[in-house]
Each structure stands twice: as structure tokens, then as C-alpha cells.
Length: 275
Ligand code: ATR
Image (cartoon, rainbow, N blue to C red; front, side, top):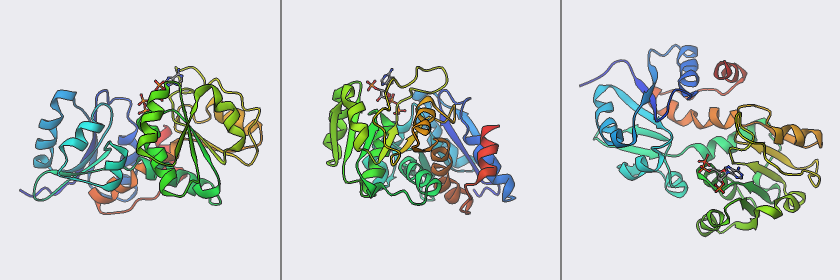
């Protein structure tokens, strides 16, 4: 059966908060594509059924978010190298022969956000300091390692989780959470991958006394855009990059595959997503 109107969406539980429908909706309107991108509330136990049924209903692919990122990887017919390395999927494309390809575009989103906001920034500029060791940290570490960071220092409240990531990425050197403040002075890039600083969460309790103005500071949190960490870093004269661009850039490969057009990330998109 052929379907004329291309469909895509985002699967998660919960899903109401997702900004992806606004993001893809902006691109569809801007490029005059007669497709749709919809939020789909799918509980954990229903993922397999949903992924079986959606291509039969005209879906070209879907983004997956919490709690489906690992299960989607396990169900995939094909897995990209970067999704395998990150251990989670966020972008699925249904295959003509059945099944789907699982990709992870979070690392790309993180990297492109920094590169395009600060064209002179390079992961190879010097050591990185990454705070947090969850799923987002794994994508950030993958991006830094792939792009030549000479060292990646990793601090997490629960040290065992950082140790587990260090076993996967040889460039990672684990430091105690309590020593993170000392490690700031040697960092070319400082990344917060924890939820601290997000609306409704505590702030990251970290002194930036040792922060050099040469350090680039970025946060994966984008609500608020200027997290307490970024505000404090800017006050110290450091260059800061907010987390919204990571969300925008990670969406590009999925849109390109499903709707056959590589979309632009620009200010109009930022505004559409912030509405
Ligand atoms: P994500 O997929 O967004 O990375 P996650 O896998 O739940 O989410 O990871 C959350 C990260 O934030 C973890 O590194 C977590 O630290 P723990 O491993 O010690 O739980 C970190 N985090 C959450 N709340 C925190 C807090 N109050 N103080 C320090 N770190 C915190």
C-alpha cells in the first residue's frame, strides 16, 4: 500500500511536554511539505506493537524518547554505529522490506550546536569536563571522543555510573564529584548533562571560581535557556552555549530521511520551538 502524505512523530511516555512536534511542524510549514509530525503517547509495554503498526499507516519514521530509547535499539533490524556506541536510539526509520533502522542523533546535535554557535570551538581544543553520567552524558562523551577531545574528565554524584561509562570510552578519566570544582581550571569545554538547573530542579551547586574565560561552557538543559550555570559562567567572562540548539540539531537527520529535505536550523526555528 502506498501512502501519499508522509507521516512521522515522536513516541514517549509522557509525551505532552515534547517540543518535537513544534520543531518538525515549523519545518513542514516552512518548506511547504504536506506531511504531518505527531506526538504519540505509547506506554512501555506497547512499543513493539506500535512500531509494527505505524509503517502500515503511512509513517516513514519516528523519534523515540523516554522510556523507549533502549528498547527501540534492541528491536531494530539495523543499528547505526553511533546508536550502538551510545546504547540508545532516538531516531527510527522504517525500512521498505520491513523492520526499522535505529539511529542516535544526540551526539551530532550536541556537537553541531557548539560548532555552529562558536565556529572557532573544537573538541580538540583541550580537555573536556563532563558533569553527569546518564544517557545524555553518553551521547556527549561519544561526540567529544569522536571529535578528538584529548581528555574527557567525568564527574558524577554516583561514581559507579561514571566508572561504567569509562569502561566504554577509553578517553574518559573519572574524577570524584567533590573534585569537579578543581578540574574546572583545566577544562577547555565544560558540559552539564545533569538535569540540575532545569525549571523545577535544584541548581548545580558548583563554584566557578577557577573557571577560565577561555573555557566554553554548555548545558544540555534548555528550560530555562540561561541556566544558573550559564549565567554564572558568563559573569566570569566565559563563552556559553545554551542547550536548545542540541534539540534542534538532533532533529535534522530524521526530518531529512522522512521528508527528503535537509532542513535549516536558524533563529526562526528557535523562536517557533520556544513558543
Ligand atoms: P539523562 O538521560 O537525561 O542523562 P539520567 O540517565 O536519569 O538522565 O541521568 C541523570 C544524571 O543527572 C545522572 O548523572 C544523575 O546523577 P546520579 O547518577 O548520581 O543519579 C544526575 N543528577 C540528577 N540529580 C542530581 C543531583 N541532585 N545532584 C547531582 N547529580 C544529579
